[in-house]
Length: 141
Image (cartoon, rainbow, N blue to C red; front, top):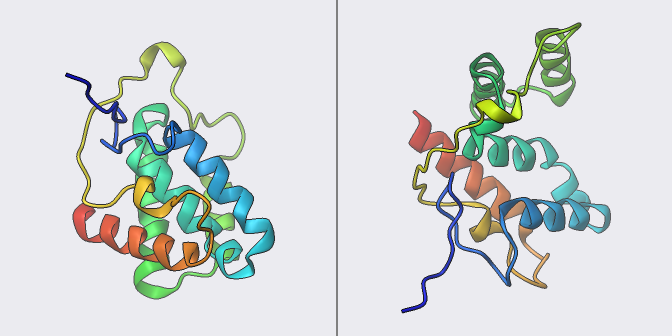
């Protein structure tokens, strides 16, 4: 029996042989020709990072979660997000865990990057990113 490989962190299936990180790269590439999608860059990257947390410190994930919720709930401006995250990561503050400390833990999500990346279908990706972010927001509380 052949099983479809799934992401060890978010549970997403491979799409056209691409893993989550590769799908993220494809979506980011679409931004260059889609101004609406480019406006959602923060939500794209933050949604990916919140569903793939093993590489980040707990403090970084907490800070990211805070600005993510404020962006979704209160339209926190991107400039303010940059300022806050810049302060949180200033100096020698570590945002990533050393490779040896990264322990991916599977958490199944209702919506993942595999629902946003539709091969050769960049049209509508911004709306899919917003739906993905809203789903994460509901599941995170």
